[in-house]
Image (cartoon, rainbow, N blue to C red):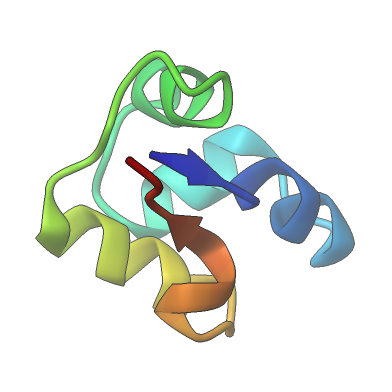
Length: 64
């Protein structure tokens, strides 16, 4: 799974800590997601997309 979380978060002028608080996750979780070392649950992924004001498909993608 790849993502544009860092790009969209920075465009929204939001820190990792601010995004983490807004989606009820830890800052370490956001760091791992941005580094693509961790795939979030579907629920968390939707919360992140919503907080970044972007369609889910613009934030996360999956290729086999």
